[in-house]
Amino acid sequence: MFLNMYDSGLICRQTGVFKDAMFVDLGFGKFPATTLQTAEYLRRINPELLVLGVEIDKTLVLEAEKYSDDLTQFRYGGFNLPLKHLKNIPIENVRIIRAFNVLRQYNEDEVYDAFMTLGHYLLPGGLIIEGTSDPYGRVWAANILRKNKSDHLIKEALVFSTNFKGGFEPRHFQPILPKNYIHHMVPGEEIYTFIEDWKKEYKKNLSTGKTTAKQLFIDTARNLKEQGYAVETRKKWLARGFLIWMRDEVLSM
Image 1 (cartoon, rainbow, N blue to C red):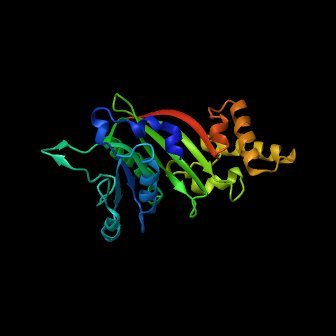
Image 2: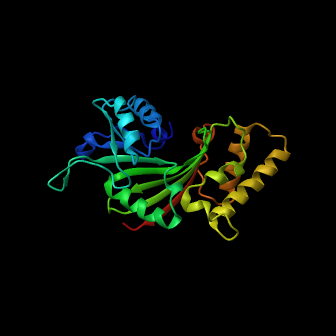
Image 3: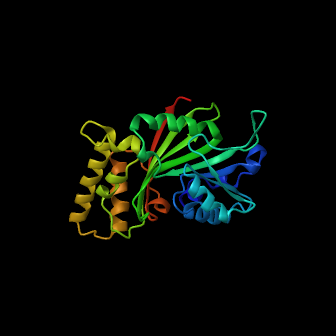
C-alpha cells in the first residue's frame, strides 16, 4: 500500500525502458511471501508488472521457483542483482528495489556501498525502499532512496510505519531503525534528537487524555512539524500509520 500511495506513477509507468522494468524484492527469505503478496497487490494497478525475487541462499531460490510464472521469477543473487545482459548491454531494467531486513545483518560501513551497488541498477526516477520491520510486520522503518536524472542517489525520506495493532509509542521504532541510523541513537546525533522530540510530544499528548494510538500518532507528527521538522502531515498518510520525514540528501554514485 505504501509504495502505491508514495509513487503510483512509477509503478504504472510504461513509456520507453520502463515498459518492462522490474520490481525487485531483495532477500525474500525462507518463503517468498513478500514477493508474491507484493506482486499481487501492485498488479492491481499495473497488470503487466514484472517482479523478481532475489535471495542469496540457493536452496531458498529453488524452493521459491515453484511459484514462478510468466511475470514472476526467482533468482540467486545479492546486491549485485542477477539481471540479464546481452554483450554487456542491460536487457532488464529495474524501477523499484525493496530490501527489508537485509542490511541489518551487515556492518554499518557496508551500507553505503550496498546503496551504491543497488542504485547502479535503477532507472532514473527509480526507488529503493530499504529498512527493517519487527517480526510480525506491525512496525517498520525504511530509507527511501531515489535515483535522479544525473545518476545521483538521493536519500529522499525516512519512513516510520505502524498498523496500530500493538498500540503506538515512538520508542517502538528504536529497535527497528535502518542500519545507517540504529547506531546513531546517541546524544548529539540528528536521529536521536528526532526520536527524543517525538517521545516528548507523545508524553504531552498522552497527558491530555488523547489515548487512542492513531490520534496520538497524528497529533505527535503535527507537533513535530510545528517544531520545524520536514514531516508530511496530510491525514491520508498519518491516518494509515505512515510518518514520512523528508531528508533530501545526495549520495554520490
